[in-house]
Length: 179
Image (cartoon, rainbow, N blue to C red; front, side):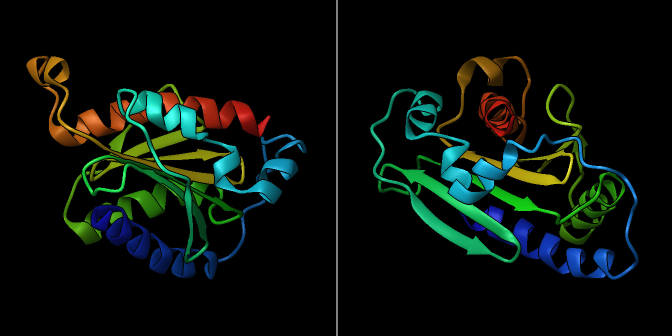
């Protein structure tokens, strides 16, 4: 969980910097129904059963809720630091154009590479094994912590890339629930 905390803190600091630089007139592409998800929080976007499925049917406890900077988090865990899923959501944190800048700046700050990810949201990046997704005015992050997937390892995926790949189905479900 420490990895995500570092990335979130870097992004929170960059958020203050980027939002102070002036607004963007881009309109949100997230429908008004997202208001219900906003009220219920990130646990309404990724369910316990979703997390258990990703973690190979491990039994998880009740969700833990946290707020880190502009993001609300929902964490499903088996009580260890070995198996957990965290979803974070922030509204009006980034615009479509400042999201790219924030991802690149966070990667530079952490001395890692921001990997563009396709097939989910309007824009998405993998940073340190965390999947970050922008959809309209909604910014989501998905962190999956689990044992290495030997099938993906044989295909040449790094551990960080495996974690991003594991998070993709969660991101798809969460985005569908925003509609």
